[in-house]
Length: 324
Image (cartoon, rainbow, N blue to C red; front, top):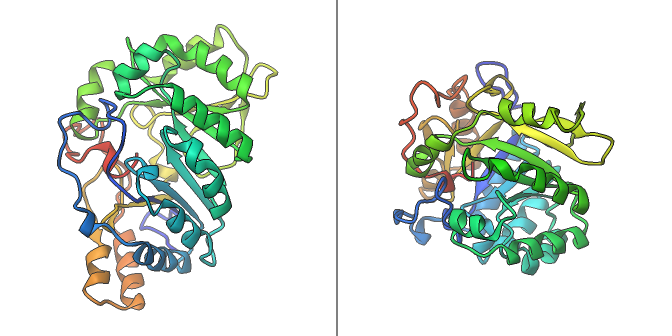
């Protein structure tokens, strides 16, 4: 079992398989950013399977493939298939912007991916292009393909930004009801240049919840998954909405996850810079036992909480480096 010094059981690993993305959402990956990992430093599919196997031996049960945008990496299917075959891994999920999901939904389902988180901040074409630099239509087509392939649940992640998309919430709710999706609202975070530039649009989600309660009844609900959201059912509909509040109401005391970058750096907290270069250890010839011992020692250093409010300029890396 992987328990940190605060008694939290670490059983969820978010694995970035690329820091590249075909979108340039201003709050995540600014258009000026060029400092990407060199592909030669990316973990290979075999190295990924080896590393995840050691985490599984230590009790990790859920792996989420992230990016950047994981679907821009050509080996994504091979990586998914390799991880899903590892003994002890009970769940494999994926976060995506869905721009390429129409092509990948079916093969990834066959490779073992069960659940999807899809970033979608607005249904307004003009706003969508301003936020992402991309067209909306391929994303909506990707969501439709995912539904047809049987993914469940499909969660829509909507980063709420005051003056940009906070007035689009009702439309997104109706869209998710119509298409049988789960909707999660997320506060902006001061991670990297993009996250800090978006701070002027920060909106505490208590305000969104208050707005919703004037229009709908919200009943507490539960939903399968390893995330930190508080969930509510909208009226008597099948729609469940979630609120993820890393700034206004942190949930660090129940944190059960760590993150690994595309180059194999183990990050203990999204809001801290402490890391361990497991990729370099593997390439230097370490044994599996040495890997497991290093992971154990690192988990003991996992901080109790992030410091987004106290030190908002601490994180230099862009959000795309670890997938949020």
